[in-house]
Image (cartoon, rainbow, N blue to C red; front, side, top):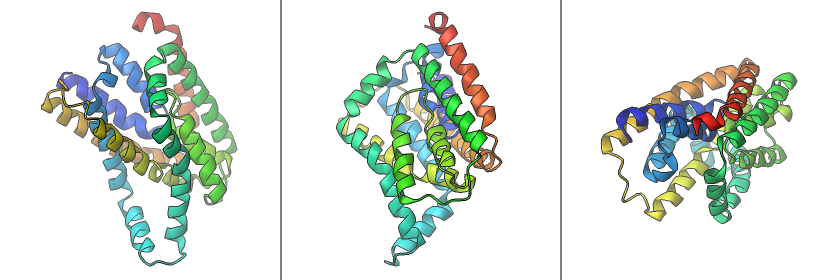
Length: 264
């Protein structure tokens, strides 16, 4: 993988991780166009995912500090309640990650661009309904946290956007737009870190042929793009403009289905 390819894929990962357009789906499309299979480069995947987690931590550093300090008051306060909701939302994805990781990896490797295209169209439909309902004024409740967590599990399928699924589901549950975006981005930090740790324990990246400069370029590309996309997405959700991404996903999904044979 050349520095230019790692730069492009890092940008794709950073932007699509937060925008509701499916990072996994776009990475698969990017792999096909560049003929650079990221799935064969575990270390690169770990690096760019780590970069997007870091960008989330930077954007939400004040929120995370408030939660952290609130927990150490050892009281049934708002930070403690919010943390419990985050934990509840992570249970479904934790179960899948711990017990069905091989099945998930097989699904990721086996799905083709036609399948990704249809999943992007499905994401488009979800975003359209979320835009039409426009959310409400509720906070995320305990039951809602679990439902949003289940939506995150569905987003394992390449082409289904994680942020689109979780934010869209929250809005359909009448959660306030800003609170929906905040919860969606904070709930993914631990699962992504956990996935990276599991991948690190494999040790299969030791023989990676990716040059160190390509890894560095990919990391910073994903980090900077992630910072930008995270801030933009918060603003977009608050303004209720998800329909633009619904249109985008419908177009890209349709093109992926139509031009599958040409790209492959």
